[in-house]
Length: 184
Ligand SMILES: *[C@@H]1O[C@H](CO)[C@@H](O)[C@H](O)[C@H]1NC(C)=O
Ligand SMILES: *[C@@H]1O[C@H](CO)[C@@H](O)[C@H](O)[C@H]1NC(C)=O
Ligand SMILES: *[C@@H]1O[C@H](CO)[C@@H](O)[C@H](O)[C@H]1NC(C)=O
Image (cartoon, rainbow, N blue to C red; front, side):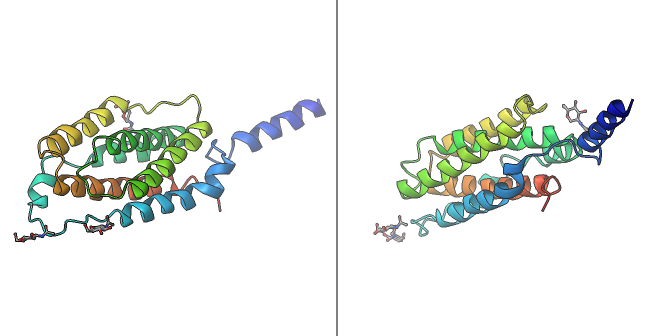
């Protein structure tokens, strides 16, 4: 009898208090590594600032998927993390596209990709069984970035700058999305 009671209490302790997701790596390292990725992205400043491409117009061709972030923010903790993993994976794939015209120093790009991939892997290990329920929509959105921004504008410096800025917004949004899950 006492056994059962102790067991029940343990279960309550384990699954109670709202969030069922506990991931030590996330508590200690997510914010730090995510900040690092933003720093690296900030340093990937375009060298050819001389060009006068119209970034604003091109940027409007693909709308930021606010609705997907809104959806994720109302989903379970596991799905919030799974969504973030998928965003990071898509970012990584996008930046591995032909970046020979981006004027970024290769070493900076590689560091950035290294951090983004590490973030994706470690977060994924926090929710091994979860898959983003909106994976299809997210993939379509990133495909649009590739086709309607990078390819359409011939992988120009301006196009890459749009991608860089958009990615910055994604990284910031994922930080905000996961901030409530991280216990300090
Ligand atoms: C920018 O271009 C100049 C001259 O082409 C080069 O010396 C410099 O290393 C470049 N800087 C970056 C950050 O790529
Ligand atoms: C900047 O633009 C001017 C005028 O179009 C051009 O003469 C110059 O070569 C450009 N410089 C660079 C670094 O692209
Ligand atoms: C989020 O999107 C998924 C898939 O489209 C949907 O099934 C789910 O109900 C949405 N969640 C919320 C909280 O709206």
